[in-house]
Amino acid sequence: MKPGERILGVEGGGTKTAWVLVEAGAGSGDTGPEFRILDQGKLPPSNFRLVTLDRLRTILSELPKQIDRAGVFLAGCGPEDRPILSHLCAEIWPTAKIITGNDRDSSLAAALGSGEGIVVNAGSGSSVTGRRGDRIEKAGGWGHILGDAGGGYFLVIQALRFILREYDLRRGEVQFAAKILRALSLNNFDELVRWAQTADKMEIAMLAPAVFKAAASGDARVMEIIERGAQVLSEYTEAVASRLQMLAPKVVLMGGLFQRDSLYTHAFRRRLKKNFPDARVATAERSPELGAAWLAAELSDDVTFQAKLSHDEIDDLAAAITEQRNPRSENLEKMSTRELVELFVEEEKFVQDALRGAITELTRATEIATESLRNGGRMFYVGAGSSGRIGVLDASEIPPTFGAPRDLVQGVIAGGGTALYRSVEGAEDEESAGALAMNEREINNRDVVIGITASGRTPFVLGAIGRARSLGAKTILLTCNPARSQNTNVDLAMHLAVGPELLTGSTRLKAGTTTKVALNIISTGAMVALGKVRGNLMIDLHAASAKLRDRAVRVVAEVAKCDYHSARSLLEENAWNLRSVVDKL
Image 1 (tube, rainbow, N blue to C red):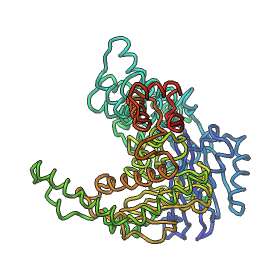
Image 2 (cartoon, rainbow, N blue to C red):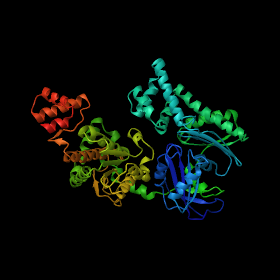
Image 3 (spheres, helix red, strand yellow):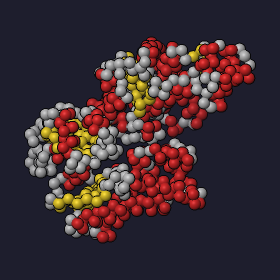
Image 4 (spheres, rainbow, N blue to C red):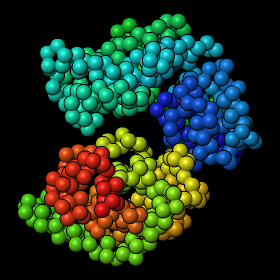
């Protein structure tokens, strides 16, 4: 390895693909080689056994191309799979030196370097791997169907079974069940069962924080589930240590369950110490993708990683008007309830001002959307956090309101469906994930993509817009920060200048309100232009509920100038197809 080489480290599993791009330095003194982190991020899952080669190629193709070396280590990649993975990587990086393997390899490298010890990994799944000299011993890691005991999926499944069992036997366990239902935005056990039947491993495992929270709050029966998980991992660790004849092993803990929940760390440590009192237990300081980069560098010495500097990005965000303090609300906690309410109501005038100031841009955005839809294209809203939820909300209302196909207007949110009701950490920071989302939806030159970002700098949104534009789609950027960077190349930029929020940085307030109205205008205007409205009546709505059937009857009565009963009869004769009835009048 030479100084200046660019090295890509990739670790892929069942919940994500984590990657890091580093540049090799010369090192100095006793510190050994130095790696400077240039970029890093996360992409969708890439378990070798669970994704197709075409899907894997699509994911890996989003990674940096200008590299000298790559280490790609994926869950499910056995010795017989490495030639296949190496060939695929060579297609993507034809001039780079490629090393491939299993994610256990990168975890060992991150936790132990070239040293000896045992790595206990507990994230959505689980595994235990030990090394002494050239000998490797493993336990667990058989996948969520047959194994992964002690991982997040295992703990959540045990908790869900416990909830339903208690309900069946005693109609009990109301408090914990309520927490799970609330975390999923569900209403009852029937909905919970239907959700579990279609949820994937990651969706189920993401409930693990709710399980730990219940245990930490003193729920003894949930704590038993946590203890059982820790016991299984401890038994696996003891088995690996015994096979490697380690009496005082170095044990390194990796994965989200150990990183986030000290409760699990303490439970595991306590159980392991009973039989291995001299074990040295520590939490990993490096992530597996850094281990992948270290393996790709083919070094035997330890290395130092320098963190990626992002002062420019931080300064850019801090300068956004949405991040500034509002002088009118600097004493919120000292206001009476009425004063606070009056302030919020008064502040809404800035929403009106922002919309009036953007009439020209809103008109053009509506025209662009109409043109795309009329020519057989689709409209996509892309956002993260509050912006993404607002986009999904508006898109979801188009089919029932206007009888449009479900794929005509789509909302894309960073972090996927889970992000609609729960924060998905770091999802908005992945520019490559936004680009990949556009590829997966097969964006083309008939489509229009509207990026929604209050600050004007959300990487997921900018990545999506950049990729959409490269695929020929029309692109619109909607922000509430007129001072945003002007580097983004789009067909239309709209700046809804609502000013600082009453609660600093909380863009679900004025920025959210303005964004929702703007999307309402664009989508409604496009539907009107496409002939989905007669006067101000919805003539293509789906009469799928009692309320909507009543509305449909009143629409027919209004258009036909007939009584309610006659209008209902017309709809019944036409299988409640409102458009068919109106077209005949």
